[in-house]
Image 1 (cartoon, rainbow, N blue to C red):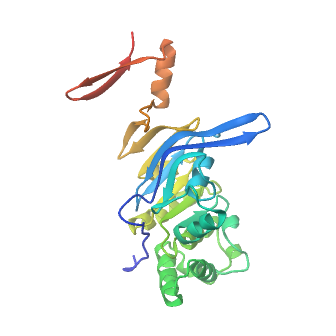
Image 2 (spheres, rainbow, N blue to C red):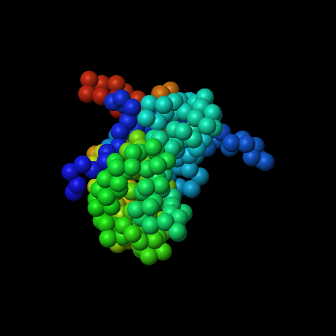
Image 3 (spheres, rainbow, N blue to C red):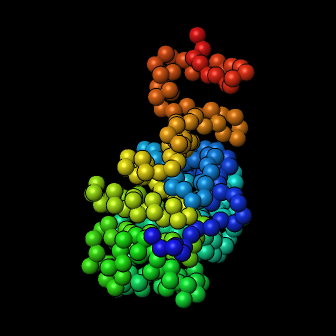
Amino acid sequence: MPTNTPTTTTSGAGPAAACRGVVRIYSSPTGEVHALKGVDVTVPPGRMTAITGPSGSGKSSLLRILAAQDTPTAGHAEVAGHALTGLSARGLRALRRRHIGYVFARPTDNLLRHLTATEHLAMAARLRHVPRPVAREQGEQLLELLGITTRAHHLPGQMSGGEQQRLAFAQAVIGSPALVIADEPTGELDTATTGDLLAAVGELTRAGTTVLMATHDPLAADAADQVLHLRSGTVAHEVRDGRRLAVIDTDGRLQLPDDALAALAATGTTRVVVETTPDGVHVRRAT
């Protein structure tokens, strides 16, 4: 591994990104759509966080907000310590350019067919105002870290889909943004290529990069340090350090995991007893 691999930094010692009570409401011909309903999320720096959930659960809406492509209807969201609420379109664009890298699902959507790998990294570095000598050094380090040094002077059409996605991550990371957002980055890849890509992304996080990934892929979720599972616009549960955690939002609402919710529904009750004891707080079905 290169000794001076570029790392991702955040403003101060806080999270790379965070939401508190985030609500997002869209207007539709049939009325209002409540895509997010008071979401609380913390994205720790230097880790990989996966967002999972069925279609319509709010993944895309949350990703758009944390990518500074959209702003909340209510609540607070920030990236690298910069609040998104109140920013103009120009302010959001500046925040994206400096602090956020983005990887699309389809490899071909991330790259320009007429630029080589080295030229892609140079272009991304210019957009982040990285000095040319630093950009050249970082680019070489990233290509080595991601295992595509031999593709440095190849065009995207001369690379496999997995190699293109690794280049897309290198392009997103150069210049050390606070957050790299990946929208279903393994969706177009086979199982073996997915494993290679996730291993490469793991190398990036060990070097300090913060990755937030929306995914339906169990392999990608298993590779994450933290998993946020969305259900109907809320965080249904969180998986961290191998433990599945129920989520309590800032208003004190407890979100139960899907199986616990199903077990309660099977009994025909929507009420639980909450007991506070010396060893903690216990939730049990009301009888």
